[in-house]
Image (cartoon, rainbow, N blue to C red; front, side):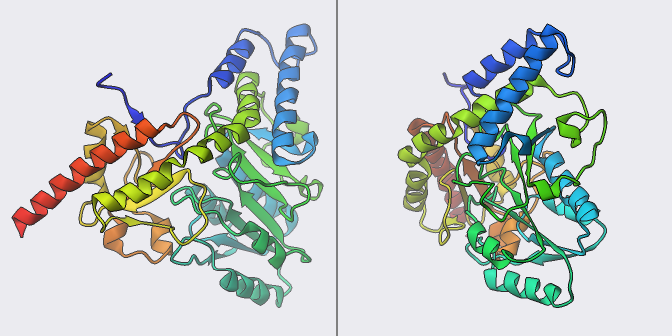
Length: 384
């Protein structure tokens, strides 16, 4: 089909898995409130608790530690803003390349904050973090350290185990944004030093509109929406059994889907071929561990807003970074934090793949990229 869209924007939102759709449709046929005691209510409640079990198993915790929310942004806000207030936090340390959901929540705490620098490869600077922790600990401050498991723009896997060691025997609070890492990077919550973490359904093929907060018992006081006592009193509001059921089956399928994707090595192939198209194309995060689900690159001299139009005209869907900026193409704060030259930042694009991505999708992307680069070089040559 000539007009078929080649979708390469999974880090923004993955297509809905058929099994998730089926689970949701089954719930949509049941009328009722999951807090009701009649038969329909009990069916909806059973579906929610089954999904809770699946997510708990996927993250390595007990079912009672999983709190469903309306999104990962809500979970992160509840974690950061509510956690600061409830845990007596004096200072927040947050990654300079964090998702804007984290940065805005940190700003909303109204207390002192400090960014954790990134190196040129896109990983957090552990020496700088150790110094920040030491400086604040010397003043007997209680810190909240907020870091992401996987960067949403570059796919760089952050050194979480090393960060855990820096605060292991302290009173500090560690918050993990696991939105892009969930289902891709092995992680077991209970034995970890992480106190709270947030995950999202629509990044792994579940529905948009549902996320989850995972928290240790010591963090139970971190609440923002008391409401009617739903979600063990931690998050009020009637739960959507359909969305949660879809989330549960997507979580159950995530590891298998990622293992299959990893075997395809789609973005490794794309990265090598981009250099064959033009060796001046820059790939960001090459010196760090990456998930293989995102490839951030720049075509030198070609602004990303122009590139995006060209890809879109060819029915290739990718992005210029995070998709959570009201549809605007804005300069990447992640790449700026990595110390990337501004002209390259303004040219940066992101390709991201997931459960339904194929080699044909990558070949189509590469063919369109070659066309765009050839046109760009031709115009540049004519201008010269």
